Amino acid sequence: MTERDYNNCVSAHADGVYRFILKNLQHEEDARDVVQSAFEKMWLNRDKVNAATAKSYLFTVAYNQMIDHIRKNKRIVLKDEFSEETKIDQGEIPSFKKELEKALQQLTPLQKSLILLKDYEGYSYEEIGKITALNASQVKVYLHRARIQLKEIVGKLENII
Amino acid sequence: MINLSNYEDWFLLYADGELTVAEQEAVLKFVKQNPSLQEEFDLMMGMRFQPETEIKFADHSTLTAEYFNELETTYSFEPDLSIQFPNKENLYKRTAAPVISMFRFAAVAASTIVTAGLIWWFVGTNSVDQTLVKTEVNVTPEVNSIEPINNLPQTNNTNSSVSKVNATNQVAFVVNRKPVAGEGNEQKYIVEPPVEEGVKEFVAREQIAAPVYTEQPRSNFSQEAIQAAQARINETPSTATPVYTSSPINTALLIEAEMDSEKQVRGRGILRKISRTLLGERKEEDDNQKYIQLAVFSIPVQK
Image (cartoon, rainbow over all chains, first blue to last red; front, side, top):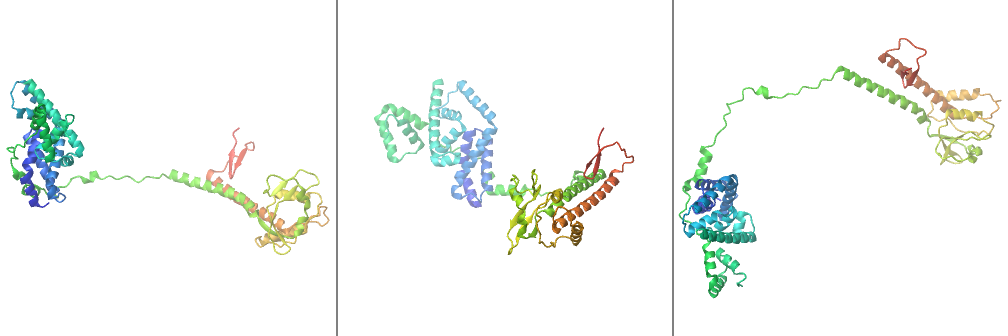
């Protein structure tokens, strides 16, 4: 890909990648670092990257770096999750959207990524499979399990409220 | 087709956007036909996340090609070659060459000499037999007149050069002959080496018809040995009771063997002198002291 292609890719996909990572990590600084690292890697490998598949490449790199980041900061993520539950116990009355956001944070990173790649970016099962190193059938099964789990969590939250 | 047992999967596929237009219409029609499932269908559709477009990456300029190019060019460093490690000599490693002591060198030299002497001694002893083995002699068919040989009992070792037989009025030692192809009326035999004592005993035995040899001296005998053999035959008194015409070939073989043994004895004497020089001569000879002679070395026996 040329320098121009690269810059077009930045304009077209930087926000989408950032949203995807931010929704997963729930941390703006970390999300920015991951996105910047992903773009830097694409720039360094620009000779090997095809402009047509640049978006998929970018999401793949960003997803992998995000998983690495989560592994490195596992304790911090757990702490964040407990704080979220504490907030619910404190009796806040969230809207359905907020409930859904909180329910999303209780899913695993893979489940979150599958749902966000599907809903945010509209990727097919095959495309999600390429990004997350799964096959299409696995993506379908995991994604359906994630949505059912999400529904159950939301139902529990409604009962608590 | 969608029904009450699989509707959940169809709802999930609808939420994922993986159905065709016709399938989507079929799902919507199924929900209308089953109003009790409408709430579940709505909940499943509500599980979908809409992209939040208000979330944007703050500064796109930090992702552009210009930014990364600037990072590569502006914030790269060239090595300062003027900076050098001050005490580089201390870092070099040198392994000292191994020192071979004179004692070790002398020990190696002595063991080499001893080994060479032992090999020479053993090989020199066997060389007599090797010179005698398989010496071809032209013998006339009259040799076959030694018929009693064939009547002797067979021994297991058919290749042995001499077969010893304990029987009176018989030849005690039998020269083992192997016939080989000859020219004309002559038949060639390979006479394998007779033992010296055996030949002597053979001469002293009872009268038997002595074979008449019509052989010619072989060229590989030294002239000196042939002359000595002829002289010895001539010295033999013709009136002697055992009528046995000794073969000059056999006699020459015996003389050569004697000469070799003389050389060997001479060689042993030289080695003995060397060993005495190296090991030191015994100053006081003790007549009562017993020694075991091993090659050129005399080992005193402990009393």
